[in-house]
Image (cartoon, rainbow, N blue to C red):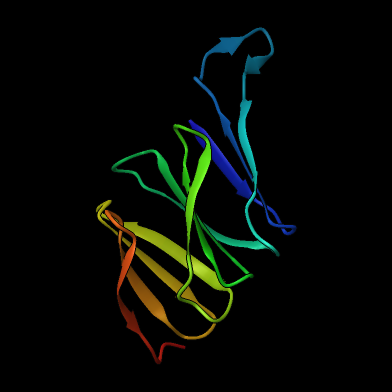
Length: 122
């Protein structure tokens, strides 16, 4: 089991549990903590197919990409001009992101290329 939390001050923390019970119940262990954004974390998505890629969207107009196996940040995606309020993986091969500027972007996850941005969304 994995729990990921984004904070108002831009932090990103993850806990994992093997769901084994001891005398005090289930144990959670903090496995990573990042200073991810300059501002609040607004959205999170975990790539269910690969299982090791986490993305976060923030009020600082960026999407950050993290490798959870190595516990490192692998890059930033810079296409939006307002807070990134939605990120979601599609079949593991693409990422969809939406922001307050009314743009929805389609990213290819193999090289993080923005394949299309659709304007005019409210």
